[in-house]
Amino acid sequence: MDLFTRSWTALRTAVAEIPDPDFARPSGCAGWLVRDLVCHLVIDAQDVLITLATPAATEPTVDAVTYWHVEDGPPSGEDPLDALTVRLAAAYGEPHLLTFHLDDVGSAAGRAAELADPRARVGTRDEVLTVGDYLGAYVLEWTLHHLDLIAHLPDARTLPPEEGLARSRAMLERIAGAAFPASFTDRDALLVGTGRSAPTDVQRAELRDAAVRFPVFLG
Image 1 (cartoon, rainbow, N blue to C red):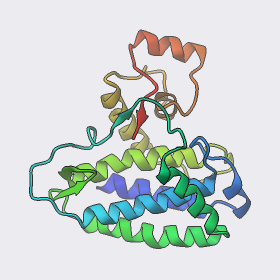
Image 2 (image 1 turned 180 degrees about the horizontal axis):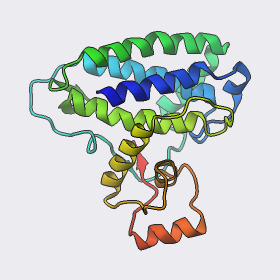
Image 3 (image 1 turned 90 degrees about the vertical axis):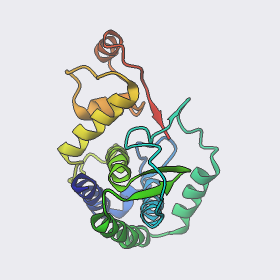
Image 4 (image 1 turned 30 degrees about the horizontal axis):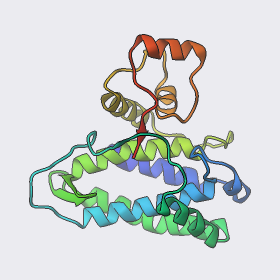
């Protein structure tokens, strides 16, 4: 629960620090500008609010790791929601309108998470899981998107929390079914492991020796 809060706070802080011109820069999400990614974060925050307000009475069907679906490939850009996100981001016009909306909805999502009972069960995506596991899954979401946000912003001041990077790496390793080589930093493991950056020749050889299946495309 605490790591969710710290990861989400760091991500929202990083967005608030972005100069207006940088919203038109590419993000680490292929085909998305920074403004598109920020708009996606608004939708993510709405999802958190909706899920925390959707109690479930049945036994959990997934946990923080099995919540994630492994896709056959990266997003194609043809998904209707992805296309809608880009149109919505453009409709904001001025970056300050987008950041205001993220701060408004994002703050509410953060407060709802802090007030939630981690043992309670909630429903989302036709699955049931505890609040603790749901928020734990979102540590990976926030961490990856924080890396996406600053991928082409060399002057970014606020970075993902080290604990969030480590937790996200551990989750990705469980999803991949193998540990990344010890020589990989947590950041490298996440970027290479999810296909966000290409491995060096040395890293590729180490991954092959470790029998790590990569990249893992999460959905």
